[in-house]
Image (tube, rainbow, N blue to C red; front, side, top):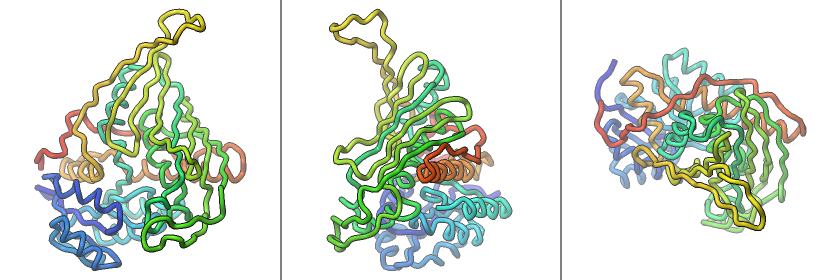
Length: 377
C-alpha cells in the first residue's frame, strides 16, 4: 500500500468547485494536483486561482499518475458517466450528490467499483461536520431519550435568483427534492438509520421559470420535476419524519431540523452547513395553567470538532485509504439516499406509500478529535 499524502484531482470547474478548492488546498494529508473540465480555460483559471499545478481537459486528471482520488463535480445527469470513467482510470471517486439520477446505472457504478477494488464516496459531507456529528453523538448517548420523530423544512423562491445557469436544478435529477433533499435525508439517516417507507405529494407552481442572474437573465427554461414536495418517512428502526422541500415559497426558511425524543427536542444546525448551535428543549417541569407563560428548560450542547467545509469527506476517504478502514460517506450510503429520494418521487406521482427497497449498514461517524489540518499520513 502506498504511503504519504494522497493525490487528488477534480473534474468540473463550475460554481461549487470554489468551495472544494478552498479547503482541499489547505488539508496537509491531500495534494490537489489537477483540475479538468470540458471547458479547459475554465479549469486553467481555477488552477491558477488556487495554485493547483495542472488545469486543462478531463484527460489531464484521469491520466495523471499521482492522482488516487478524483472529485466529480459535474451536473447530476453526468455523475454516473464521469464516475465510471474515473473507475476505469483506476482511481477512487468522490462524487457530488446525488450518486446518479436512476437506480440501475448507480448500482452499476458501485458494482464496477467493487470489481476494481476501488472506493466510491458520495456527498454531502456537510453531515460529517461538527454540527451533525456532535448531535449524533448526543442522541446516541441518550441526551433526548429514545428518538421518536423529526421535522425538517427547506423553502424559498428558487435558485434562479442567484444561479447563472439554473435549468439543471429543475431538470430530472434536480428540483428541491434531489438538490436539497440529500442534505436532510442524509442527516436523518445518520440519526435514525435506514429508511423503510415514504409517502409524498408534489406540485409545480409553473411549467417554466426565468433566469434572474447572469448573462442569461430573462431566458426561460422548463420545470421538469415538482418544485414543492411534502414528505412522510418511516425508518426501519421505528422513527418517523416529516419534511418540506420547496422552490415556490416567498418565505425563506431553511436548515430546520428538529429531532424529538422521549426526553427532549433537539434543534440541530442546517445540514447544508458544517456546524452551528445545538439546543435541547426539555419537557415542562410542572403543570401549565393558561394564561401563564410557558417556561421550559433549554440546554446548549457544546459543538465538538474542527469547523471546515466541503472536502471533508474527501479527506476522510484519503485517510481511510491509507489506514485501511471504511470511510463514512460510502457509495452504498449515497445509493440508499438516492433510492429514498426516487421512492419519494414515485410516491408523489402514485399518491401512495412506497417501500424503499435498499438499506444500508450501520452508518459510521467521525471521531470528535478528527482534525482536518493535522498532518497524519
